[in-house]
Image (cartoon, rainbow, N blue to C red; front, side, top):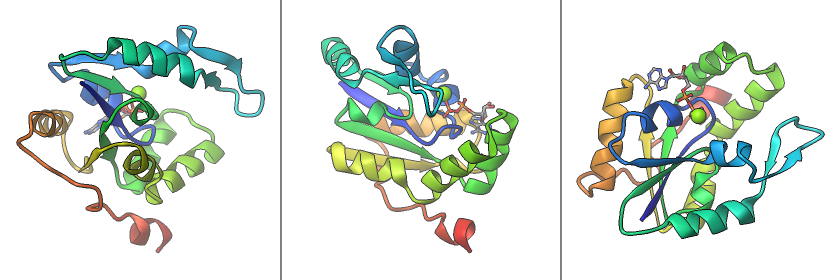
Amino acid sequence: MLVALTGTPGTGKTTIAALLAYRIIDINALVKGGMNFGRDPDRGCLEADMDALANYLAEQDCDELLILEGHFSHHFAKRAIVLRLAPSVLRLRLEARGYSSTKIQENLEAEALDVILVEAAERCDRVDEIDTTGKTPHEVAEMVTEIVQGRLQLPAGQVDWLTEFFG
Ligand code: ADP
Ligand code: MG
């Protein structure tokens, strides 16, 4: 079974995935490793080959639980866990990463408007969301484990950053 661990860049996907006791497939690594069409001239980032990724990931699907980690991993799984983070905290993380102000603004707006959550809800049969704000990576990893083991349900719709972000 494939489960996507997704969320806006900076919400903690890579950090949390590293703490899980499951096999992880890093979607960004696959894109960098060749499943791409080269650099997008406007954005400077690699343009992912979504068909190649989908084919490869379908081949990996088996009885074992596999976690797909990346901000568009929800395109390739029927179940998704979306990591959420208050935009005020996300801003600090993206600044620390050295993102441009345009890229920071784009990502903060995407988080405030639930863009990834909505995409996941449109594509997946089941979506849970975790508000990671103020939680340690271990606490979040434990919640992910509880969700995939069926002991915790956090259906979409608990998080609302609109007041915080747009005032
Ligand atoms: P993503 O893979 O979603 O882009 P990262 O896992 O790279 O995000 O995390 C971004 C930054 O936030 C890293 O510096 C990481 O150490 C930090 N971080 C991630 N999760 C937490 C958390 N729960 N609490 C505090 N810092 C965190
Ligand atoms: Mg990452």
